[in-house]
Structure formats: structure tokens, C-alpha cells
Length: 114
Image 1 (cartoon, rainbow, N blue to C red):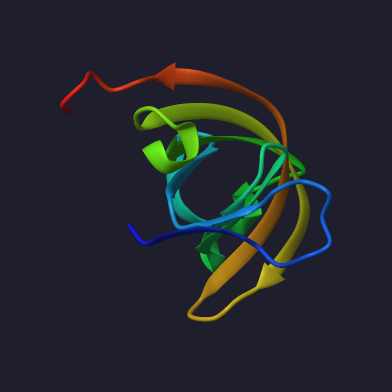
Image 2 (image 1 turned 30 degrees about the horizontal axis):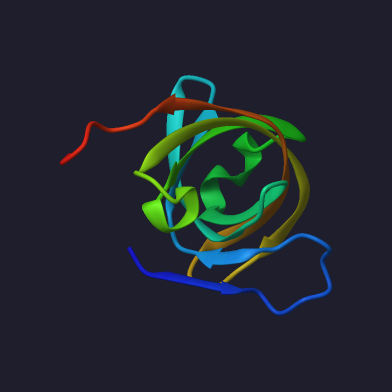
């Protein structure tokens, strides 16, 4: 997993980290793999396959794996509820999704040494 935790250069009011981390979108009975481009405490931008974009409605659930560099402790699995703000066609049959994080909870923290 490539991580560059420098601040994204933009005019947003919140600190945003450039981060390539796994993300799973809950699409009915399916789990759709995706990965983040950047992340803040209120939003996330992620990529998923263009064939799966119809499963990302206005509001949707997703799970995000945060690395220790972000949590300042251990890897954490976070369950989120989000709202899609925009969708953009990206390269290589991918679609980018900018989403607001409406709510979240920590699902698990792996045991030390895991």
C-alpha cells in the first residue's frame, strides 16, 4: 500500500491526506473493492470499477482500513455511512467518487503484533 501523508494542495478548510488505502463499498449482498485517493475527517475520495458505480447511491455504507500513520496507534477498521457528492470518470475503467462522511464507528482494532 502506497502512502503519502502530505497535505493535499487545495483550498479546503480541513486537512486532507493523500492516502492509498483499501475501502469496501457495501452494495446490497456484494462487497465492492475500492481504494482511497485522499481522506479527511469529514470526507473521502476513492476509486472503484466503473461497472460498480451504479451501486454507489446518494447515501451508502463503506468500510475503510486506516493505517497507523493516520490513527497514530494501530491499523483500524472503520465502518462509515457516506453521501456521494460527485462521481468522475477516471483512467483504466475506474470511476472516482467524492463522498462526505456522515457517520462512522470503529469496528475493530487488530491485536498488537498482528
